[in-house]
Image (cartoon, one colour):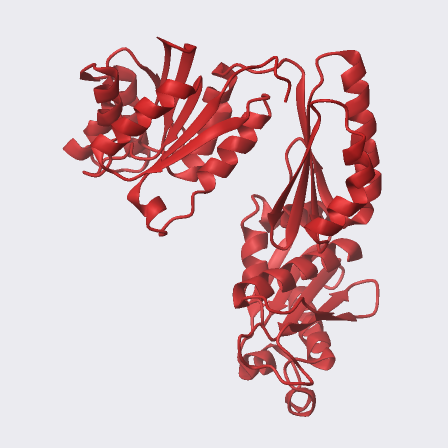
Length: 427
């Protein structure tokens, strides 16, 4: 990032559950990503438990070194939600009940048909002199404050710890109040099944030739790898360089990339969008992925327009109940090309019963060994068969052997991602 923007950003995450491992701090990742879209790079981050003294200490440290401080967690109604009280103590001001904050709490409770309690009303207390930020998805309002400091103007935003609430508040309200480089640009690519080192090697000539202050970032989210291009494009020359590099990266990544743009789209949403465009109904029959594909599809808003059904046929009797010939299971075993084909065709047949034989349908099946036990020399852990039964072609089965030494969760994620990639290619 250009040194013309000498602004240090800091993240403070509050909550004992973050420190003891009960909750993974995904908020810090998302906040950093969104700050970067404005050319703001996080220089410091703190995690602190629900002790008011330690929270105040964290605020003092952040105030001594950063211009933009984003705080999440501890804004709720329970006794361990002490962030607002700690912030008032740090500022040296009293807590006062704010009319807008009370309205936010009352409105949310009204929508949920829940009564106002003293604990809920506590969320309307804010440090005197601060500004309330509405929470569109919860009862806890946020807080925004611009204050003078030894470093110059200092901006504080206190937001809930619930990711859905925090992200909406940050994107819809807080982000637009923060300073940033005019013309700063970020562009991203989502790839899968390619090692980070291989991507680095593929893009190395571009990396070596990057103009000053252009940055190429890599992030792993198994089984995906995400790449980002970030730069100050405030003049025409830098904008031209950015566009040239962006096009070259897209060309070099080719079909290994399934989503690109200012924000990335999950592969299941990409699949459903293509299904919608081709007027195809998707269904899935899962064994080794245990319903993960169905969960991914149904997590996408509007999935009901193109996702018909999912069956988790874990026991062999469940496979037979769906329509698989029991002789196939006895002869070839559940983890086999024959059973993967039969599962996909059985699922498609069930979809046609409900949708009508004129409907364009595609059914995917997964049957494999996710471990840690159950593998043999002939059928090792990491083996998976993916079946694809579609309206306009013969049923196809892909034999997949995942990388070794993965955890059970990783194997299931890998199998599901490969199934989604196969569906995308078949639509």
